[in-house]
Length: 50
Image 1 (cartoon, one colour):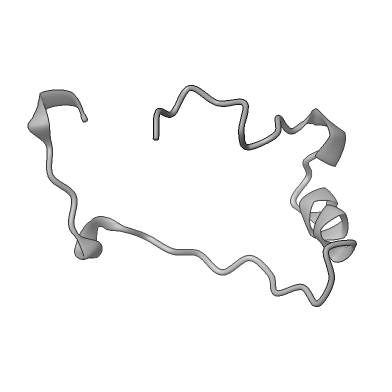
Image 2 (cartoon, helix red, strand yellow):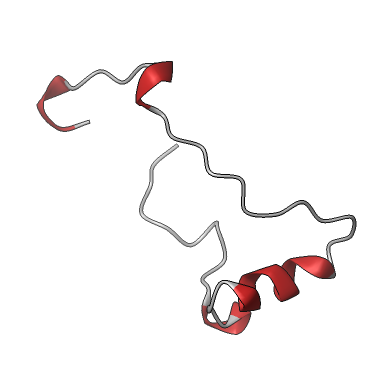
């Protein structure tokens, strides 16, 4: 983290968007949010180092 900033549980904001019963329903939820599912990058293609 930049500047040695610490984060705590109180700093995290969680927003419930949807609950799905099957993986197939995920694309529908994403489309309802106005995003084209095919335009999303796979989660393993990011610059975040684990």
